[in-house]
Length: 230
Image (tube, rainbow, N blue to C red):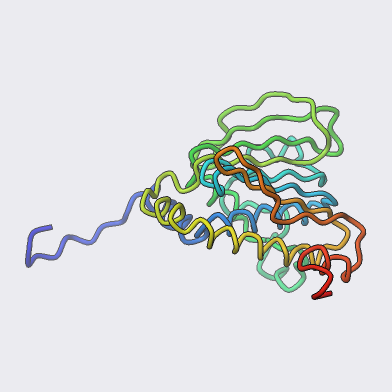
């Protein structure tokens, strides 16, 4: 664009639109973890493991023992606006799940270096390892023995946004606190679900949060904030 002249108005390309939208939906590691944990809870999980490597900048992995993904849904799993929780706007008032828009997985996939799903549906005899392209299309699929449930493995979150990655690395402690706070909230409302959160930095693993399933609200408060607060 030359000085003093206004460029011609033109539509931006599809890839740029997807990146802009995804960057607005997924703002940090905490948001990505939040969406994955909500998916696990919606799948009926009673056990959820959240594992980060280098504060989530290298790897985010969320594993659950929920119902898993049906084989016929593999291709549409990461498709934008594809969801099993809503069919029409008129059903919106009846939605009881955490998520329903079908944006979360597509947005995370779009801004990640790699997006892998390992899953086995409760009706399937074997599981599958699924690798997706950044646009949400299924790149590869292979069989894998595993328990019923789902593991989502994200590598290099915000790879297309180097400035965002630098900010995340500089403010890692703040983002870790936010991630922990989200998980504390789920621990308080999902008392029947075991939740464990681990973060590995430079080879050293810490456990910011761990609660067992079948606990009372008082037990949860004690586990999260100590006996004195409870």
